[in-house]
Image (cartoon, rainbow, N blue to C red):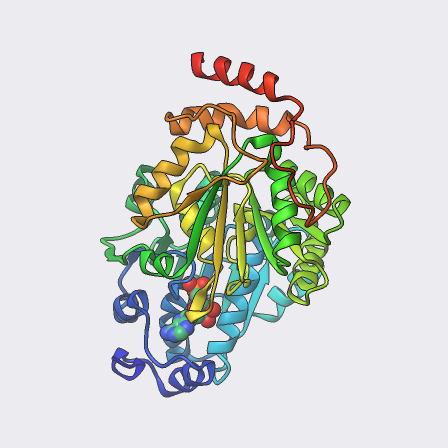
Length: 430
Ligand code: AMP
């Protein structure tokens, strides 16, 4: 199956060829003809499935057919600045042989250049909801002629509390339009939102990328929460890993861990929603250029970042949502490269990790490290325990000063062991 049979025009096929794509991915295969036919689409597709091209290619085709002066005809909403920038970069690549003008607008940067760009006239706007509202309020964007609305990673936008902002944006759009909704999951909220914004949508379902997951070497290390950071430093140092992407659940946790890794002698940077755009861009550039060895990220910040094919991904904390695990580890081992995804699982995360095991349907071997054998009781009650434990994790202090690569001492006595078992009992009773 090649791209030729999808009904795309020659300029787009040339651009696709230049990107080096030889055949459409399943979501592209299913969605492109439906979008070209002008229908609304509700697609389940995760990062890494080729979803961006699945909506961008037919969108560009529809926009280019009419020609004429540049006026805002398509709006793509994304949850994060990084994703907006990345979608825009992809779109520019596919539009290279077409006369299409595009712009990205997101917060954290000066608004004035965005205003000038909008004034000069664009065909496609890629925006995060917050900054778009800002432009709507200032009267610097006119959405009245938008023909296509695309909600990218709609589930994330809802998770991030953008529902009211999206409602406001949609009110400013013409009722008569094409709407495409892409989401990794179809929760009740997503389905409800789709029933309000979409008109008889065609559902496009693609299997979760379990096949990708099967290609990635995965393992879990059972370790107490308090020992995680020491174990992480030791693994990175002793295995001589470079370019390690580490996931934490909270922004605060990401900051703290990056600092601790630095004090262990590893170059590290944190990337999350509270960081300025400049700081995020720099951290990513340093990481890509091997100036920073460990990038510590929250799920939201890492989402949509163009940093796949990494050799090592570590789940410092297990995600609350099992699907996030798939997103996280999908960063490694792409395109036949070797990759290793390691999860550090503490007692309270045991139930969550079991849920993940069920989702990915592959055996994830579990091990303990000598000198770091876990003492915490195992929780089976996934959601409740792990959320209840978040505050505790955030408060628990770092392990005693370790150095990267320093071997754990077999049978080393660990301060706080008694306190931990006491806390464990309290947790069980809760
Ligand atoms: P996405 O899911 O849109 O984030 O895309 C994931 C990656 O797959 C991006 O790096 C794309 O450039 C790449 N990609 C998209 N479509 C194809 C295709 N048909 N063949 C090969 N790579 C693709």
